[in-house]
Amino acid sequence: MPTRRCDARHLQTQAWSLLVGCCLLGCSESDLAGVGPEFALPGPPSLAGVMPLTRPEGLDRQKVALGKDLFNDTRLSADGSIACSSCHDVAAGGDDGRPTAIGIGGRVGPLNTPTVFNSSLNVAQFWDGRASSLEEQIDQTVQSPLELGADWTTIEKRLRADRAMRKRFEAVFGTEPDAQTVKSAIAEYLRALITVDAPFDRYLAGDRSAMGADAVEGYELFSRLGCISCHQGRNLGGNFFQRIGVMGDFFAKRGRAPSEADLGRFNVTGREEDRYKFKVPSLRNVAQTAPYFHDGSGETLEDAVRMMVDVQLGRPVRDDEIRKLVAFLEALTGEVDEALL
Image (tube, rainbow, N blue to C red):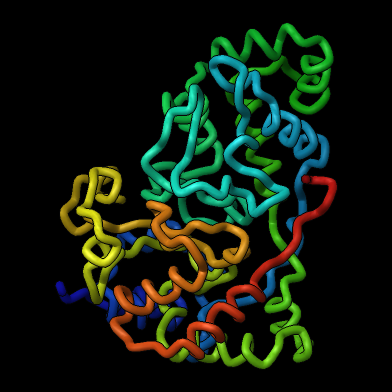
């Protein structure tokens, strides 16, 4: 494993747990690009910048409502058959529950569909981080032949032909629908999809009855084993990139050789050090988003926990410890405003 440098700049800008994770697990400074100041907390590694999620403030309600309707609008796909919500069901975890995504015309994608819940808290979008913003992610999704397969010229014509839709855009943006305003509205809707009031958040806020004994012990175990080295910050993940299989061969254990999609961030940067690296997924609402991993090979939460402790930490783990870790992960399930569903 290559040696990585932990210098004064890291100490000034990153949480202690992130430092520990980087030094032990081998992430580079570029893996931390975009990590926000919310992770620059003093204190011991066990804190890890973890704090309760709160409802987003300062969002434009009209833009959010418009974005919600566009998120469910099949006119954003080439043949009008699917919408963003076809793969991101906000009533059921914000994903599609499949191993890998299915797009226009039944085309099967190579990667598991990430949840849209709390996606605005991620350092980048997609498993390989190829989109630096929600707007860029929307742009790529709309035009991808494996997803919506559309083009903006056609979408603009369709929306402008709808008198009611034109009026809404004029009220919100002062202009007719176009690529930029469509992306802006959907992104505003996605920023509203923050899950709050999870038992773990209530526990952090001082309600010690919010989590059962197994979940509390699971949180302590989560910290002690080192899971929190990668899954930290407000989103318990999503803020840097890590190699899958730090302490073991993930691909050998799943029983299938690596494919091009398994190259992860390498497909974006072309750097050898990014081979098999992926954005560390958020664990918020993870109990609702099976199957797991970038390839959907983890069928259950128990399977996912056992695999990660094995290939990322190289630690033995007992069945009762798996149960407690799962209980903690289940306590990370929060809720979004019903008006957004």
